[in-house]
Length: 213
Image (cartoon, rainbow, N blue to C red; front, side, top):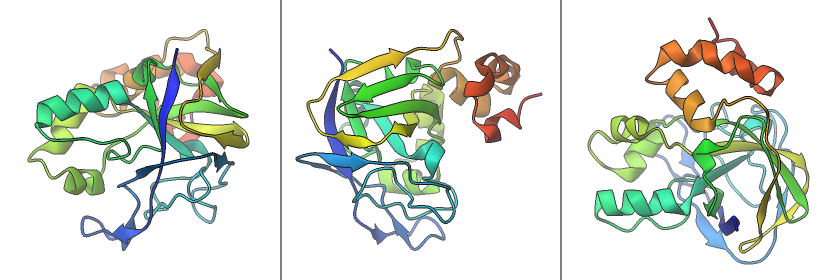
């Protein structure tokens, strides 16, 4: 059964890796329920979809289409082995660390119900300079990108509360086959795949639709 392994929130910390003064990339698991709501627009909105979370670079992160970031514990385990050091829940900046669901194989537009909230898969995470500096590995962005297992951003469809241990129920899986991993590859290393993203139709975010040939 797919579950939420942890819900992770961040507090502001200095960001030496980007012009934004603060970052919330290093998140930590919290106990008890956390409220989810649509944070509104990327600029001028509430930032994160989780009450109590922090996003520093609001020009490039957060907002309705990137309200929640999910990453699989199984992938963190793989990176932990590859990097030869601990990679705790929340270290990659994810709000939800999951178990027993292939986050990268989720289809764009897929809907998950967790507790009283419902979420919609919108797009992959594109790694940035803050992520590179935070992990601190030579060539990290290239290595992470080549793996094509970026984790997924989600929008909040129905507000509610979530907490660790709750089941993740996939309540809608679109007919198309545009997955998080496919979209990531099309946007990063395999631009020839961009035309295939059109199959997602109305499930495509507007900024991705603008990139289609």
